[in-house]
Length: 306
Image (tube, rainbow, N blue to C red):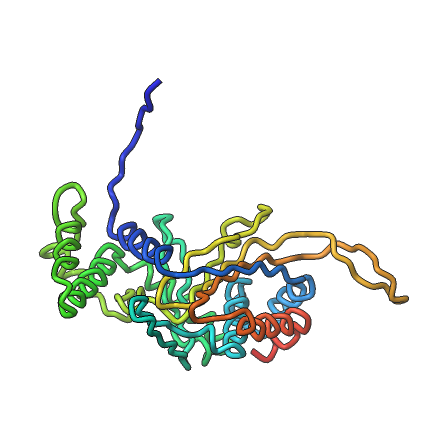
């Protein structure tokens, strides 16, 4: 029996960019992964207590608090907050660490598409400021035409390739985006003017969609109650570190009673997958990041000072 196709969808601009970047990733980056499964039982209790305390005017989500925790971890492990440049032909490379922590966070759009949004300079923000920033980003997302914004990024990249003398590559990109069934549809005329008239403070710009210094994904926010772990992630050059959180899970844990005897009790575990670029990072440079998260999970009362 022959296969009977039911639908064919040509790549839009978002899928074109994702396909190009992930293809480059797997072709060029030596990925190394590590699975981290911390006990977050006390951490989650403190999150509930924190929200019930009246300290904050708005509810703090686990996602927001974890972003703050991750930022604290990156401060302790600056080697992860970096970009790499590498020429495989000459075997020459460089690693640039950054003071500002710009987190590329995967975000589910109102259209159910996934998009990576750059959250800027998180290392300088208090928990309240971070929460306000995330809520404002969500507001700006609602006013953003992502096809228009992503095409602007793609056009910039194509012009950059032209300046480097890569005329053939630039021409192929233009043909791929502007001809035939694969043509990318962008705003024209009045619609384009009306969209561009929206202040940049009220919508996302191409800078908000460019890469940050690290990438964080939280599949657990969309798979609550589902057991599972992320085991593999694509690193997008020039970033050298990416992580993904799964859904918090109830699991049996070994604890000690008052007499020092091992007992099994129910607890909560947060599965996290780390992946790093082995050209830039070794395992020992991830240890400070994990140790800092362990401090937070074992002493979550420090969140009251965030």
